[in-house]
Amino acid sequence: MNRILCLFAVAAQLSAQVGFDRIRNAAKDPESWLTYSGNYSAHRFSPLSQIVPGNVDRLKVAWIYQISSQHKVETTPLVADGVMYLSEPPSDVTALDLRTGRRLWTYRRRIAICGSVAGR
Image (cartoon, rainbow, N blue to C red; front, top):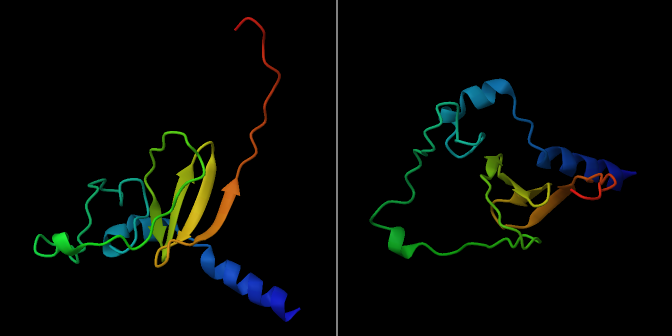
């Protein structure tokens, strides 16, 4: 029983619940990227200053995540509470730990395929 409670507690911590007020005030939370354009102003700009012209040549890859599809991918990851959420073809959502790149979970939506129509 304790294992079940522990798993539930971990799962609850990993699922970011981002309310309207937090999204509306996203500019005050620069470590997060809560909307497609970062915030409702849609400037697609982050005020973070860890990367500057003087240190950009010392950047190194921290981790890489390889999607499982060979399709073309165009996505804007969302970031909240140390978790990066990204979409993958055909219609999956994956959550990654920002520190390690480890996949936390993937949601795969079932796609219903109706009968095809001949001649089209």
